[in-house]
Length: 119
Image (cartoon, rainbow, N blue to C red):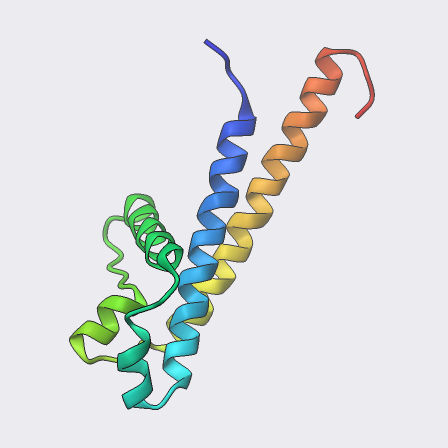
């Protein structure tokens, strides 16, 4: 069994990307007039819905008490996403990204130390 921090670092980076995509979509939908935001819920980008679902699932795992909804869920229910919450989610994605990069950097340093080389 291989024990590596690379996997955890990459997971954090992927989670941060999904959260940033979801937050950006919510900010975009909040800035549109009500008639246009209802149409934007049916996105032509198939990856957008997968990323927003993954990020909301990840946030639910990180904090089960937190109830987050995606832009598609907001538009389906007729509500508009709150731009303040989306901005907070975007800042949280930034912190997750920094944490993931830090984990990868430390893992690379440890691997270099174990191999007695300088990375």
